[in-house]
Structures are given as C-alpha cells and as structure tokens.
Amino acid sequence: MRAETLKGHLDGLLLASLEAGPRHGYAIMEALRSGSDGQFDLPTGTIYPALRRLEQAGLIEGTWSQEGGRQRRVYELTPAGRRTLTAERGTWREFSAAVTALLEPAPRPVTP
Amino acid sequence: MTGGPAVEAYLREVAASMPGPRRARSDIVAELRGGLLDAIDARRSADLPAQAATEAAITEFGNPRQVARAFRPHLAMIQARHTALALAATGPLVGLLWAAAALASHITLRHAPPWQWPGTPPLAPAAFPAIGAALLIVVTSTLATIAATGRLTRWLAASPRIAVTTAATAGFAAIAADLAVLALLASQLTSAPGTLAPLPVAAATAASLTRLALARQAAFKCLTTRAALI
Image (cartoon, rainbow over all chains, first blue to last red; front, side):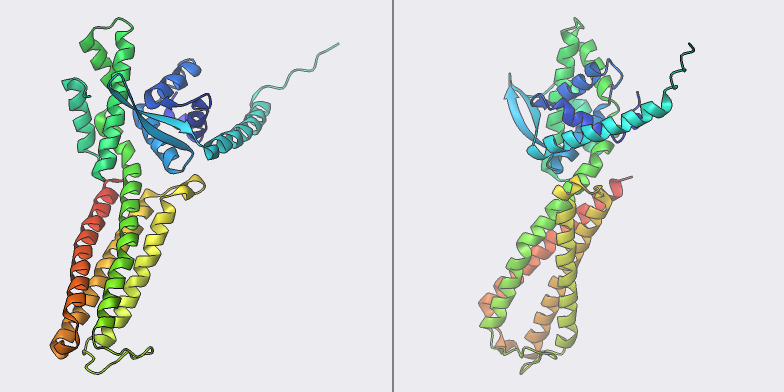
C-alpha cells in the first residue's frame, strides 16, 4: 500500500506501535509491516522523519541506547502521546464505522 | 560503531543532500546507521550471505537522496529554532551592554522625543526609530519562530518554510539593529568623542560585532535550509 493512502493515519499508527512499550525506528517499521500482514510496507523516508516530527510535538520521546556496541534511538510515548492516541482511536472508530456503513452493500431483505 | 563500507557510503550520500545544523544531521545519520545494521541482521538471520544482506537492506532503505529530502522539513525546523533561541539568548545581553555603556558615558538622555542631549550626533533622529523598528521585528519574529517550532506543532500544522523565514527575518533585523547602534556610536564619536566611557563602549561594541557575525551566519543557514525545501 502506498504511503499516500495512509496519509492522516500515519501518526496514529506510529503512536499505536509504541503503546506496548518503547521501540526503535526499525522495530517500528517491522511492527507496522507484520501487524498489517505486509500491507503497510512504509519506506524509511516516511517513518524516520515522522518520528522526529512526533518527537518535536512532544508526543513521543527519543533516547539513545547502546546495546551490543550498536547505537539505536529508542522512542516511547509521552503522556500527551498517550492522550493523542486515545483521541485518534476514537476518531478512527467513528470514521471507519461511517465509511463502512456507506461503502458496504446493504444486506438484502430476507424474503420469507 | 560503524557499518561496512557500503553502509557508510550510503549514509554519506544521505548526509550530503541534507543541509541543517551539524548535530541534528549527525543524529539522523546515527539513527539511520542503527536501522540499517538492524535491517542487515534481519536478512542475515534469514541465512542471506553478508554482502547480499547489506545490499538488500540498502535497497529497503531506499534512494539516499529521497531519504535526505524527507528529513529536510525537520532540519529546517531545527535550524529555525536554534537561530531564534540564540537570538533570544544574546539579544538581552547585547542590549544590557549598550544600556550600561550609555549610562557610564556622560550622556543625559531626556525620556521623550526628540531624544537629544548636549552634543547629540546628527544621526540620532534617524538612528533611534531605526533601532526601535528593528528590535520590534527581532522580538516578534523570534517569539513567532520559537512558538511555531515547539509543542504548538502538536495542534497546528507545522510549516518549516514559515519557521525558517521568520527565523531569517529575526536574524537580519538583529543585524540591522546592531548596524544602526554602531552607526550611532560612530556618529557620537565624531561629534563628541569625550562623552563616551571607553571600556563599557568597547565591550558593547565587541558584543554587537560578535552577535552581528553570528546572526548573519545563522540567517544565511536558514535561507539555505529554506531553499532546500521543495
């Protein structure tokens, strides 16, 4: 799926991928890929800058970790990020319910 | 820790098309290096030989120029914020030094227009409004930049282009303010040199010249990151 299709939902998905605990950029890419059954194979140039943007907005916080001699930037949700995620989730539920109601064919009336 | 030559060559290519503050750029490169090494590890644990794993990981990360381009808005925001914070930190200091220099000198300033004193240099009537206008622009543009590059981006769509523009404006207005003050000083030196206290005036002049050079550098960097935005 192309990144443009996801536009508007990327922030919510990134926040959701951090809900269970801190993760680094590549693990977030992997989580989005495997969590969507390979549908969301988002490029590096989308994920990493978006993480920086969310950090600047104070929704996530990045810290450097040194493990096995490898430097990784690990991100975790801030309290504001957690609140935004909850709000995004609510908006998405309403939106998707409305779209489903309109896009899906209405069930045919059962003839007796 | 560094990756292999292929990884480092890729990262150098990314860094080459990413203008912005040095530390922010090396931070991004270090993060990408960690990600690339993780991607290589993932391939190798799927039994791919080292070179093929590296090539596949680099392909996955994508065209280095495109990756660099994607970071430019972020780097522009950082550049704008650094410039504005530096102006906010140095501005009051330079102002205080000039105020101290004026107080130490034998100048009795009337607290009303046309702000004249015995031996008023001919430039004063033009310099004071110019300094006032420049300072007003510095303060408003600096505060606007700081606001637009901070937590507000949570609610407002961040505009890196506007942020670097206001930051560059603040920088150039600071230069104008410094130049106007220095012109006023030169004018006073020629009309009534004996009224000035040498040491405080020298300190304030040095501060203004330093700030002027730094503001010029920062403002041009803002313009560079602005030009790199599409």
